[in-house]
Image (tube, rainbow, N blue to C red; front, side):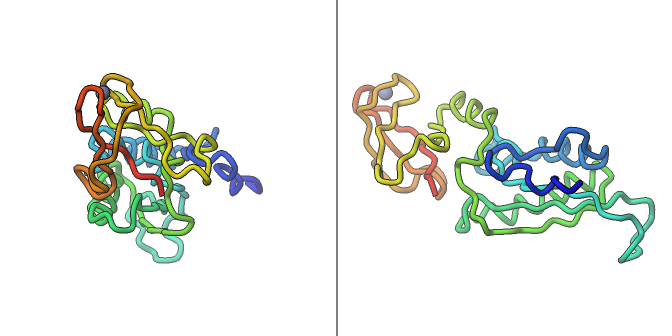
Length: 190
Ligand SMILES: [Zn+2]
């Protein structure tokens, strides 16, 4: 109990239920794993790392809502403050939790800001499968190197160039491979 707050501190990117978590908390995480990001439909909000925490609330205590509903508080950090999808995500999170029989309070927290480092390993693998270049993992990105070579998801060539700061959505940039001439999306790092 005393150490619960430390989870996810140093190894950011792996948000999820702690071992031995309360069944209600596990139910919430399972429901959240089915909420897909509107902009990248192959990734759930859990894959993206935008669900920061799920906490079990006391039932029928403070607000007396009762009715046998199972209260939880879910903290979410939007991927990108400019993303119009944020409101949609919060709504979908609320809906999924309600469908799972939970009485959820969704808190949106913008600090610390979401970074692509929070995308889970599963999320990175799914991105690669659909041809979106996953962002470099934490630690592999030197702050002094602004633009590291980005490999083409189709042919693997690193002879690529950014052709637009905005890809299919504001959160992605459009790049093109000079070898196979194929355009592809790259996640912007924040
Ligand atoms: Zn290529």
